[in-house]
Image 1: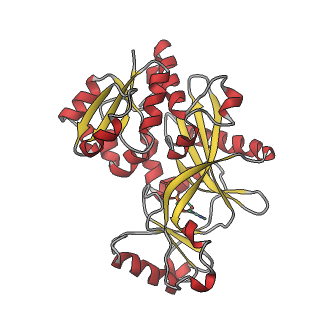
Image 2 (image 1 turned 60 degrees about the vertical axis):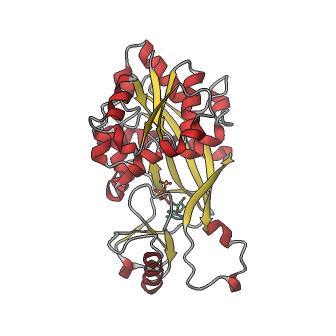
Image 3 (image 1 turned 60 degrees about the horizontal axis):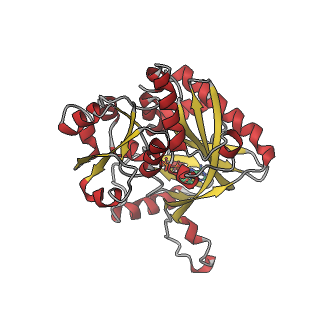
Length: 341
Ligand code: ATP
């Protein structure tokens, strides 16, 4: 019987509960400092304690324990944020989905290339601070979760805010920031699952994010906002959304073209969960500023299913459970190689 493993953070509870719901064994790789949290949950069958998640790469005791558990490792945002591309490639356990595409998520240039290949409308990239002419967002490399990101409308404003973040120790002086046109509108994070077993795409749900302290800014009258204030986009929580039904054809179209583009650029393609992240403008047009090529934490809202999974599955279906089901079905058909890398 296959097992499911993941790192103790991000959406581990959802993923491991999903494994249990599908009758699979659940394995948690857990930093010692967090063991007491995860020991509260009876659906976690086995814990591999580590000091650092990077221990699952290579030949150490944790890597061997993971490999001998026979588990398929489900990657999530913490793995992307804390492990280098070389570390991810050095994991000996099978990784759910496509581990190679995680690199495309972490590298801004590769990310842009894949989004362009998928034909997704994206915000204009701004070449450098000298090119800032309208509202521009500065982002860090990788999945920084919006921490230390800031908006500016001129190179002077950019330099002032950057200097302040460096002084506050939020970003380092030699960090190369990525600049992009800021699009105002309604932010939406579109969650999908693509099954290579059946060749079908499921739209799983959509969430919005609560980001600090940019979200708090709307509660402060403009004349009380400090001119030098550089609000950040640090994700604190997610909440549920449903889209106007007329937007759904485009949602599926974007998901499908992303799956097709990934199959062309990063074999074996975008298998499993992913998310296209962007903004609906005043014409209800979607501009994508980002994708995540793995399960996103926004799926935690739908541990008992979403309004959209209720239309596809006749039982409560979380993304974690959907992953476990794919592993279970793949194992039954002797096709585990098709759903892992
Ligand atoms: P994560 O890994 O959590 O997805 P990230 O570090 O890759 O985060 P983004 O998702 O690209 O960062 O951006 C973080 C936040 O900044 C977004 O949730 C959104 O609020 C805001 N944001 C990013 N790009 C734009 C944009 N072009 N226009 C408007 N808002 C944006």
